Image 1 (cartoon, rainbow, N blue to C red):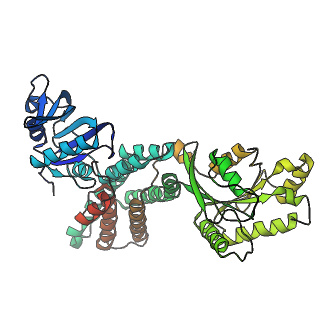
Image 2: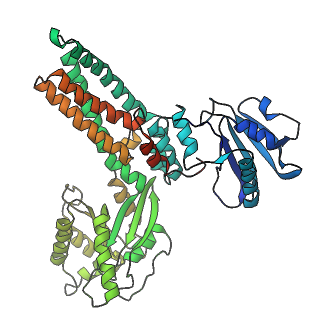
Image 3: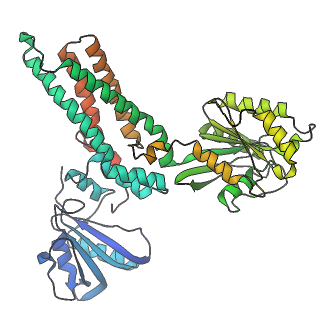
Length: 477
């Protein structure tokens, strides 16, 4: 499967910039570069040591294309495990294309998406989960997702899976050996030790599977919908959270007719805030579409911030605490799995005693919330009072304990699926031990569990799987 041809691609983002890097990898990479490179000191690239840097010019016959720095990495001590050359040139798009076209004419071919990292995997420089972490690292946009990607790329997750697989494989070989001596009715695998191993593997798999709930939101950002009636300050709250005028604010009811989304990183965790259309009865067709989208976004969100105009609670003819309680319960019943934060806005219009009375009525156990309870945060979005408290509350909803303790966190859906299937097979083996199932039947379940472990790290793979994974990479990585 390991290709021998030499590939070339731009390794920096396309477009003009200060510098650009053109990357070559393959058995003839250094020779190709040497054929178009003229060192200022007359050096021959073919004779230079690995991991060295050289100043010179890229030339096309008598024509000088650019002054460059050429980095030489000799296989197997390179990213791809092959001879690799990186040409640092000036960032003109014209220069980039001229150098790439020259190398193509000299015998290189354009790299496919992710082909450099694919070659690193094929040459044993990375396992498959580490290779996938490269893409996660490139796309990480906050501290938490960066930390997880770095831990996975360094092999934290791979090592954990590899250790489990090795231990299971050792016992599997003994089980398989028993099959060769079936007529003698002997046991080479100590059943008590095997039972302990299976229980330990089960616990580890459950921990890794549970971590996906945290890892997935950290990787993709936590969607938080801001909902409520018109004119309660939803757009003002979005602007206050982002600290910029992102949404139009108006006293006219129904100003926001569609959802507005923007992202904010709070203490290393990404949140995607969604300002929705105000929920009310209206004959306006466009506004009704916006209200329908509000309910769709509530369904997609993991956190629902129900915004209330607290000044209306002072005048019982506008809104009563009892009617508000009913609305809160409706949201809880409709979205029982969502984290709910009731945000009392416009507290600047209330006296301190009025606010205390409202808070006490709405949530008397505010300081000891239960799993079925909602959180209550008083704010003034206009004056940005209580915004930091709201941000801290949002952050507390995310379980980052595993992240702080540097535990393995699963963020990849493919890994999650394989872990679920591996757990199912391990539980079958556990049941087989409890019921004294024959070795030949247990061996089938063990092989399937080993297969799922191998899919994660790439010890078991196929062209279709690799194609699906590396197609999502950028060209040049």
